[in-house]
Image (cartoon, rainbow, N blue to C red; front, top):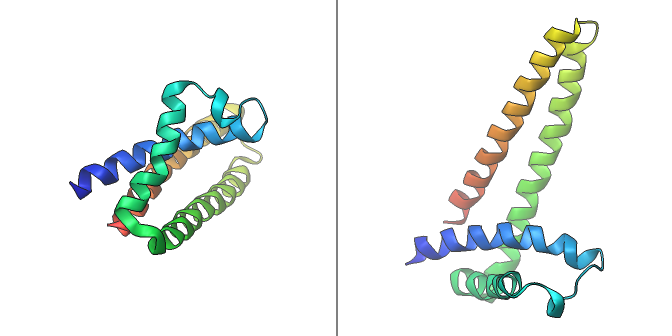
Length: 121
């Protein structure tokens, strides 16, 4: 039951990550969101409370934010390294290295999600 709730929470976090920019930019408020998104947005806090309780929610949020920061820092470093590697190369070789870099970023991003969910368990 807890594992299913954790999987559902991960899904809800993806929904919340998509809904928050709509709320921040002023395009929508919570009442004008599409029904499905609004219900999933509201359910997120309930599932988080069920899994972690009120005390652990702050710890969870801090861990999630740390994971995001580590990933963004890694991406910045990785882009700088790729820029240095491709400096002075032919455009074909540089494009290949950049494509590999984008693939590595996607893989690292997915690993980051798995690491954070494993840390939460």
